[in-house]
Length: 570
Image (cartoon, rainbow, N blue to C red):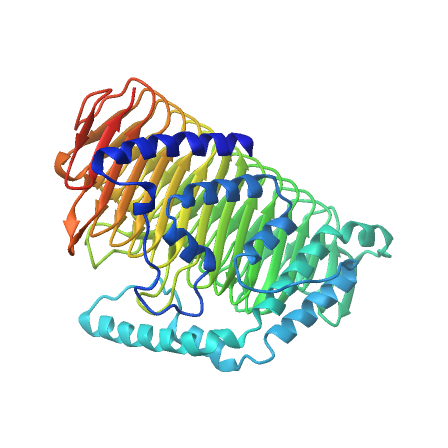
């Protein structure tokens, strides 16, 4: 932690000295939080950081330090702490914890009419389906307006304190199952819905519990609890489930397959999956793989080089709930299409944490961004958060990467960005990394939000078109902070420390011999325009190293606009 503080003081000291050249101080980098009426679902930390945007760097770095070292139980507690809730609970043994989880979940949903779930499914919240005609577009807008209005009035009918308490109890059961497993009486038997040998079966208040043996088992039925003690197993999971669900697989190269609302998806429920060993494959579609939608979903993979295939709202995604994916080690592949890989919507926390390995994060080109381009695709992924403008605030979306040479690919909206009163960030600790995106990415805040990309070490490559690489657009803050390494930055326009429409954009490179390349010099590399009777702020600050810039020379400074500045200190 001391190292983090020293680093923060170092770059902030250079920032203070840089701001002098454009007649500003740190206190001038701030946003009001009362541009709109505050909705009931905005996180307090969002308002705090909009008032002090520079604090986003320490906030996301501290979150990363915590999540890289914390137990899964503490990860969940930390996520819950972002909500203004008062939650306390006692510890219980395995079966008692499962019962308590079920009881808390039942209590959480007791006052929720079936209408909330039915309306959610009818109007398709976070729908990946895009319109193909004007008539369909108008109909989709009606659905959007109806859904937002309904959520504003009814989403709080869920008791989120009890909901998250149910998740805590379930995770406690996942960590305390071994003593129960040693004591339970086992007997080989066959079971409908399971191909392979079963050692235990019993039905409890909260649902059915089974134990699979060390051979290959195929689970074609969903149980409340599955504990498998070995073998290369196949889980053919169902969907549209609520209730509590726990899978613990101790060993083997396993395959988890499903369509929607499955595989560690807390959908009006709580769900935890823990895979202890093996090179595993996780394959699902929408609302999956560590997803919380009016619930809590947590996927934990402790070892192996794993592959994660999803479509939308997947791989650490939360909306009106918490979605976590935690991968401890291995060279992993993450592939999604939309709302994935550390994504959050309203009242949601979505976090993907990967600790060790050369990992690939791929967002497929599937859903055309018809508003802006016909040849580019919406991503809204990789440490990204978005709300329902102008009615509902966004949440917190984080992608936290440990060690390894990693590759990130997205298109429109991704890689540490946020839209409408939310926070989105990527933190990468070590390795020679490559970030490729097109627009609204790599530390981009859009429409009163905060986006950040922090890379601690390695020779990194950043490639984008625009509104990227430390860009704040429309009363928002975006920052790209690279601490060490010989780095390359390539962009077209409105990037590399650019403020637009009263936003603040900041690119800080702490050390290394770096190269900055752009196509359009007029609004990049330290650019701040003048709009709506006051200015935007854009800063590019390079502290150490022999560097090349398109806009200026090494060890010089340059100005663009009233409050745009590029400065190379060495």
